[in-house]
Image (tube, rainbow, N blue to C red; front, side, top):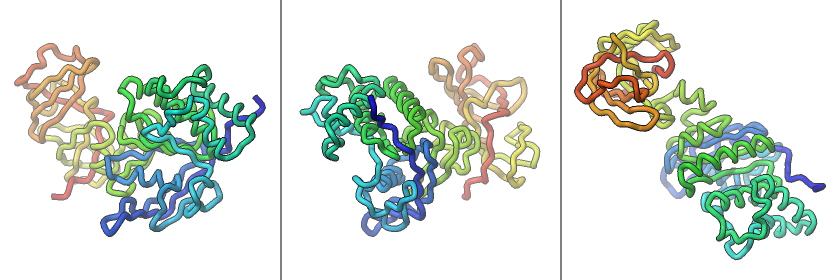
Length: 352
């Protein structure tokens, strides 16, 4: 083939972006965000947090109430969607059931009146990239959900976008297939060097595929950073609770150690000494000969781990322990808990 669907990836910059619907609180409230060329950034948050509205404003499907959106060197704030060199992969796939795979993938190029030979080359290349080169003449109704999602991805890629947007693209797939397809999307994004903005409410999905995760809450950015940074060092209780599982219990920090009930945990962190909220990841909890006094409340077998909930003087603490950690770990048993060293983080206490 003498043509390529690769395009030069573009940076994206949102400055003070606001979106209001009616007279209520803004759906998106003063969002500032910069995305580097070739970066995959995920907007993560619960329903109604503003992530999809933000994506639709980048796409040109919604107009900002205030602020600006720049793609590459061009201010596209009020530019129509079809002039932005941006494509979107939708949650619903939005495929045409009366067209075969080849026709679905080439639809946008035909609308753009590209030459027939160019359309054929680019469609073939896109289908090869997503592993559907032998499915061009199939009806989309004859494809599985995962294959239909690949058709939708090929249709987006064939337009040579400078930015590709994903609006919860895996939500219609079962759990195992979702895990497989997200790996394919990430591999393809890295192979082509695409600038990608990905929206999901699934924190595991966000951690698995992203260069950077932007956690949104009530229309604002709560925190952004690498998946590892957000998991290990959440800046707020909302992020700690939303990214993975976390125990949050009250403690006291003296600058060198955390005092938690009858236990002392060596810990170094730049935070003012005094009362703190101690964020403890379930995998950081272990049973020890000496430590925080605890009583087993419940034990649940989860395959590779057992999830155990303990009652302690500072509140309930849940742990994920190896299945063979203690054969006598039964409801009502008295044990001692130790923590860390990784998986413990301090935040200012929640205001009463």
